[in-house]
Image 1 (cartoon, helix red, strand yellow):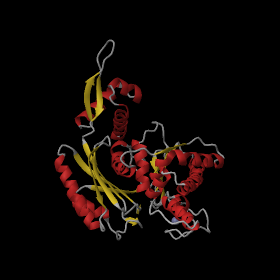
Image 2: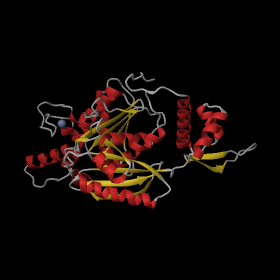
Image 3: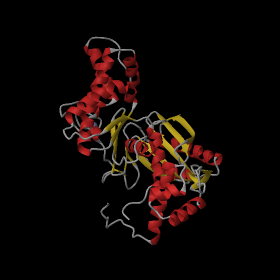
Image 4: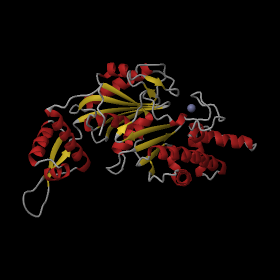
Amino acid sequence: MYKIDLNNFQVATSETARDINSRIILNLVRERQPISRADLMRDSGLQRSSVSVITKQLIKDRWLLEGTTGKLPRGRRPTFLHLNENRAGIFGINIQPCVTELALANLSGHFLVRETIPTPADATTFVGHAGRCIRDWMTKYPRMSYEDIGVSVPGRINLLSQKLIFAPNLGWHATDLKKQLENATGLTVNMENAANACALSEFWFGKHMENVRNLVVVTVSEGIGVGMILNNQLIRGSSGLAGEFGHVTINEKGPLCSCGNYGCWEMYASNTAAVRYYNDAKSGGGRKGSVKNFGDLLQLVDQGDKLALEALKHIAEYLGAGIAMLVTGFAPDVIAIVGDVTAQWNKVNPIMAEIIRNRVSTHAAVKIVPSVSQPPPRLKGSIALILQKYFTVPIGI
Ligand SMILES: [Zn+2]
């Protein structure tokens, strides 16, 4: 149930119900294919005639394909329906401070082509490259229809202007990336911050139960981001900046963060924090040798380095403390952790789990899992950002 927004609503026409039922059928096929019309009737509760009309139209519009004939002990043999996964192509771009990925995926989220490039120093060079790439791929796959590009960015987006407003690690000057990319490709560009993209990736492509409605993703990298899907909806807040738990102060006397606050959660629980713990311990103990990044630290953990393991355990404790807050606050069905830290899940998870157990007084039953999406969820999320346009129903009707 949704309260009607009196400043932004659409009245229902006779077509509205049919559109919604059509989306329900499309989603049932996507999730349960191959599926017969009889099973669609049973699963949707719609009349035989409605299922017949809707599937006929979806086949005509190339959303569905008729496939193999099923085998039953007696009676008519049903024809199974499949999603026409190559009906539309979705371009996904994952911009990160060092490398940028570009890809073309079909409606099942399978990648047809994928390219990784060093992130250019400025947006104009990037747009030039991306434009050429996308035009080439459209020529290579001429039978697909193309409308949109999804872009995951390491920063925050202004909800109204869709401009990138906060991307401290990227180093690009304030730029209207959306407009530039649209001019270069003739397609519509949708941008989303990386944590939200990861949440969408988990929600649409993660191997979770169909009934998961509340899902939180915690991205652990140089900083910490949180993406929230509550009641099946991505939460952006009034400013588009919802989810910045990484910049909640947990210790006012803590170290200065890039956001200007002191002692933010990400100063204690991120990859950067682990590297700092390790290097401080090294110099504190009067020993030579420091690590440059989290990847080096994880290698040392693999080699049995005690200080590296201590640093990893330290961030696991703080991750547990922050996640306990998310569990208490949102009581989601699932929390998925994204980041290189999941490579050491068997070391990190027991520490986090114990802290969460001790701190969550509501005893909320939450599954905490590492994200297993391949390729990395940021790129998959840029695809999900567009995919949801085809498979969701508009709310506020
Ligand atoms: Zn901060």
